[in-house]
Image (cartoon, rainbow, N blue to C red; front, side, top):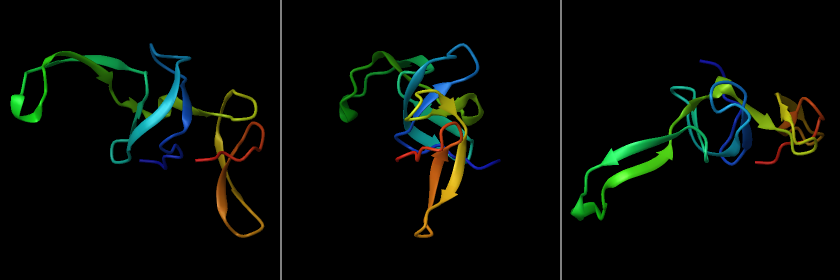
Length: 108
């Protein structure tokens, strides 16, 4: 398992699979399985049973399923295109993520 350079709140674009070219914000990251949940991407339908004690109504619920991190790229804030991520050290000694496409710092 490699390093996951995507963080919660990043805007990412899907680069492979049936959801290709879709964009969304990262909601959750599972670093153990290298998977990411992206808002509005890879939607699935779950049939849920009503549970009055947990205040769950039941029925068919549509929600996001995890997608593998290798199928995602971070969107560059300057060029609005998918980019790889590089680490850059500032003059203060702090390491930040930057866009390989434009060199722009990626805020998170």
